[in-house]
Length: 308
Image 1: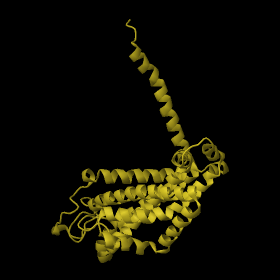
Image 2: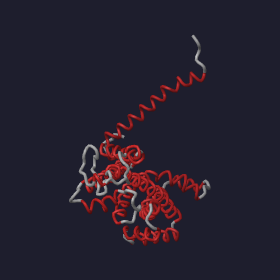
Image 3: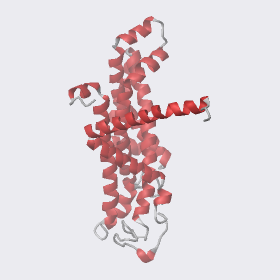
Image 4: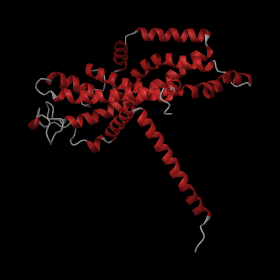
């Protein structure tokens, strides 16, 4: 019988370890799902939302921009699951393509706003003194402006478009979230290992990037999941008012404004369908954020049932 080569023996040796790792990962996910069932359901909803947005061209049964006046205002049926609007456009197809806008806004605004918030919060907490005072007064001025007024003002200056919507939402989110990042960084600054880093001569950048940032990532992740849903909802508000992506690109907010509000008594499905989808995604994002907070916060984990 032929002897196994070293490469083959390595492959054979890796298989049990890979299977064991998968089994451990599956067991961890199962324990998390049992401890946070609502969070697990919310995660499934978010995954379905992301898949629907990414594969919208393949999933949409019709062209979302194609008019067909022969089937105007048809109620939900086997041919059009969510019915048609006043131009004969398939509502389901428009919702799927609108999910792409919501996903881009949610991810873009969450990442950009989170990065800026971490930079502002960590710098303010680390240097303190005049730097902290100046930054916090700027944050106070931004927070003093009502959110909707600030967003509309930015979009009036920049113009309504998808990148400008992301910029506007990122600016508002960054300044609001920076307060939480500053508070988390101040807690870490009081730890002995930060003092040890200063004693051994670590630079400011090294302390902030290696000592502070990794230890506030739990707060960053939790706030990111919550801000994701908030960005989607804010974009829908802006689209409802006509300050988001210009037509004919479908968005959930514009569907509520143009079709839903005008024809809600004649065709209630025009209002119900985008409202239900928007509510489900935002609710799932918020519940998933709460579950992540319970899992990542050691104090909440110790106060729980001991599952982890």
